Length: 203
Ligand code: GRF
Image (cartoon, rainbow, N blue to C red):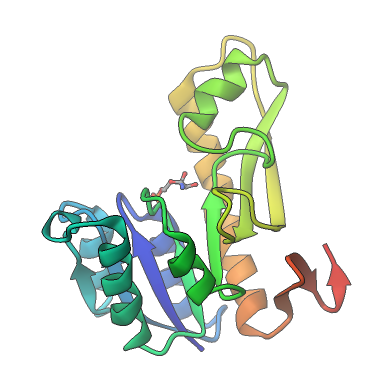
């Protein structure tokens, strides 16, 4: 299977996927890593792994639609079976999402449907939540609203420090995202009628 990964930042999730592929835990190839931020360390991680690393600058496009159209055609050139959003911090247009419907996954740092959007760790602390975590979901036009495939929980401690909580959540992310990608690459995971289906069971 061929995967294209979209990134904006550090790329720790990308690294976990690269590592699992190189250890033959996932039977797939990352055909390209594409960033919307030139400074994304994820691009360096890709280069270090010998993966084509591309940066598409949104400032050279007049509209979100044009940027997304360029991205979609760029992705299509790699003929991916799966598009993985790994810390890609840009809202995608409905037409982009529909083009890749059923073959695009995202990881979001909250127990969805709680805390869609940004600053999820601080919001969980402020709400006094006893547990927090991350979710992997299929991408649909509703932001962070597609069907959830897998969630991982961590405890929130008294007087919780935001960064410490984020670190623990991200540690979980690096375990769960490669697992879900493995399922998809083994044709065990699908999106059917806006539901996530694993081994023919609705999740
Ligand atoms: C992760 O916490 C992910 O859930 C969120 O952005 C962060 C990306 O981290 N969408 P990294 O770039 O994979 O290190």
